[in-house]
Each structure stands twice: as C-alpha cells, then as structure tokens.
Length: 562
Figure 1 (cartoon, rainbow, N blue to C red):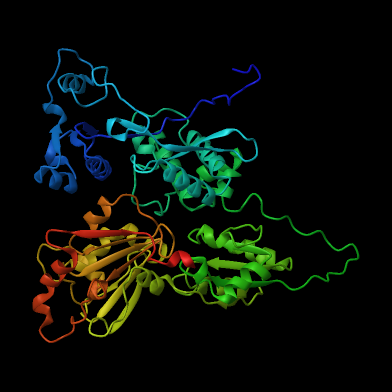
Figure 2: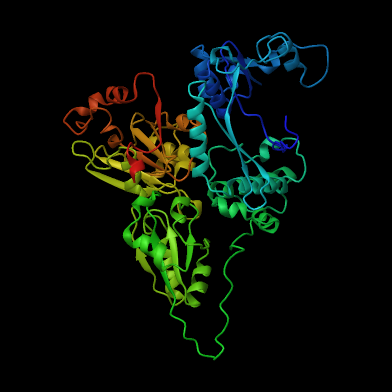
C-alpha cells in the first residue's frame, strides 16, 4: 500500500443504519398505546412475530392492539404476570422473561450475518446512507438518512438516496443540531419521567396552542411546556430559520417571548436633507392557496416575486411557497406590517388558502385601516375546495351533494362553535378542527333527546344528528408531496386517526356522501328515492367488509408534472 494514501477520518456520533430481516424472530414492544400499535404494525410487515408487554395486559391495550391480538397477529402480555426472579431489581421481570425466550434478540448463539451479493443468506443489509454536514462549518451533523431496497436493487437504492438528499435544503443538518441544542435547554435537568416532556409523546396535535407559563408550575410541567414549543418550531419554522437560531433565540422561544424575528430589518436612516421623499408604503393581504406552488394565482406570484419588500407569513404557509420569496423575513405581527409600511415598504401579508376564508383577514383589514393603510386583498385558492379535490372528493355532485357548508372547528379564543346538522344532500367541510376531532365527532353524533347523552355536545349542533356510518375524509397537507388522505366513517374515524400516527397539519375534514361519490366505478345514486335503505351496504362496498378506514399517501398521479 502506498504510504501517501489516506482515507477519511471517522467522526463519532453517528448511528449504524441497518435493515434487518426479522422472519422467524420476535419483536418485543414495551407499551400498549397508539405508538406501540404503529411499531407493531411495522414489525408485522417485516414478517416478525410481535410480543407486546404492558401493565394491565390486553385489557389496557389500545383498540388496535386488542383487535390484532384477537386476530392472532400478535401476543399481549401483562407485565405483572411475567415470571419473577428472586432478585429485587425493578427490571427483574423483564430479565427473567428474556432469559427464557431464545429468539428475541441477536445474541452469541444467533450471530448476524451479511454476505455480499447473496441477500437470501443475510440476516441484515447495510442501507445506502448519507450523513448531512453543516454547510458553514463542514462538521458532520446528527442527521442521517438510510435507504434500503431489501436486497432488490442496491444501485437503485443509492440513486433514490441521492434524489432525496438533493431535494432537501443544505441547512437541514444544521437545523437538526440546533433543535437538539434547544431540546437540551428545554430539559436542563434529568426528569424522573422523561417521556412526559418529549415533544413526540403527544403525537397527534403539534398545532395545539402551547399553554402560558404558570408561576406555580412544577419542573416536569415546565419541561413539558418548553418541549411543546420545540415541537411547534420543529413543525412550522422553515429549516433555514431553525439552522440560524442563536441560543438567545432558543431561550426566547422556550419562554414564549419570541414575537418578532431577530433578523428583522432595522429602520431606515432619516434623510440627510430633512426631506422625506420615500414612496408611500402599502400592505397586500395575499392568499397563498392550499400549498402547491403551481396553485398560486398570477397576482399572488407577482406580489411575492416582484412587489414585496417584506413578507409576513402565517406559520401554515408551506416552505415551497416561501421559497419563491427573494431573501425576506417572515413574522406574524400586524405591528411589524404597519411599521414596515410606514417606512415606505411594500408588505405582503401571506396567508394560507384564501385570506378571507377563516384567515382572519377582516381583523387585519380593520387594524391596518385604523393605522392609515387600506390593504389590497388578493384572493387565493381556498383549501376548503382544493383539499377535497386533491383527495378525489367533489364537494358537489349531481345525485349526491347539492350544496356544501364550510365551517371552523375552533371558535374565537378556542371556544366551541355550533356545527350544522345533518342534511343528506349537503357536504360539510370543517377547517382547523382535526386537533379536536373527538369533540367534533361527539357534536355530530350525540342525539338531542337521548337521556344518557352529552347535552352540551348536542347543543353545539344546529340540526339533525348524523348517522354513525356517514363517510368522512381527513385531508392533511393538501396539494403537498406528503399529502395524506384518511377515509372512514364518523363511528370509526377517531380510532383511525390515532392508528395512522402523527398528524400532518394543516388538515381539513370532509363529511358526507360526497366522500365516496367518485370511488371506483362511482356511487351517484345517493339522492334517489329509497336510497337510504342501502346506506350501510353502500359504505361496506366502499370501504370493504370489516374495514374501518383506508389511507392514501401522496398526490394524485401526474401532479409531479406541475
């Protein structure tokens, strides 16, 4: 070997990403909630046997695990019923159980084997891995991705990995490292129950408002509140902004005091001649559409790319739209818009969808007018219409839906709102309500005069009760590459949403017979005379027998052309 030959020096801190073949192995899962059910499903798809251990056993398990146990897909054991050793350690039950089970882990008696170009002889395979660098310092970051084709095409797996890397912004690794620092600031001391302060522990509602800091909160409550702020910025801030956070930024976010961007432009200096010849500022209230950049109106595109000096964006406007803005700053403060307009800047106040469809545009119009500016309102494609369309759902359809209603699931200051009652020929669209799905479903299903019913729930509905078999679709991240559509019935949708994993805000609900109108060969006879007698059979033909829901990921075919 040539003495001049050198190779890259390994930098610690990474993980070895492997793809294991679990056939004839058992995956052991501790816990019995919806997250455990999600992991159990992944293991079952990898041909593994699954054993779930939790306190209370099957009776305390979530509905999905109970169902899979009844279907003999997995085994649920009670922690307290495990064999015990004479030792007094807390984990002696588990140690004792593992000592009597030979196929749980890969020990010395079952070494892991990997061979080159012989996938059938491999216990595991190496993924095609990429570790991201900090674009400024060049230091390797904590972010890694691995792609496996399960032995079906290693070269293609490498290509897929390169495509994924090329689509991610260069700051993504630095953003992960900064969030890691922020997590450390959020949890300065080790807590007895660390899971309670993890932003992943409340999987379903990253968009739920963070409660204000309480003067009497415990250390655990304070850590939980701060971790919710970590979850908020992780979900909504652009990656470039996360990567640029200073420690002071992080502390302000965790304290709930972060109201303006630290990089907001400073005021213009006064004229040297004492004569203000600057142009008059203006404010544009602009709708960004549901998210896909190709759905921007020409007026919105012009406002963003040619007119804007400053863009103030709502947190739900997708990064793909913000990427069109040439080097600007985003903030949610109306005061910032007025201050910038007073300096002669053209301010684009960017809102998702259409600014006047639950975009609070009216409040801002009155505020700006009070401060001397008459804003220009530029309409956008409303997600209330575009979301269902991307999910293959017509909000109106001859023979199915003659009208539609759009409402919000959350009233002013978080108060409950009154939802419309059931009308067979109407489609109900609920915006900003997925985080309150159980309450919305209870409002729609609770009978008015049922002696044992929730009277407050029925009062929140203006009209007839909804049948439990009515179709519902939850469309998340409509028009974006990670769009997800969950279809179910009002009876099963809460369990369905808990079972599919983390929510992907923003999400909308579409409720009514229009949900199934264009499925397969179509079902457009809902309004025919006597059609009600076939409703439950209609739902079975749509979802399938003994199926409570169905999920579809990604955009409709050919949308990548746009």
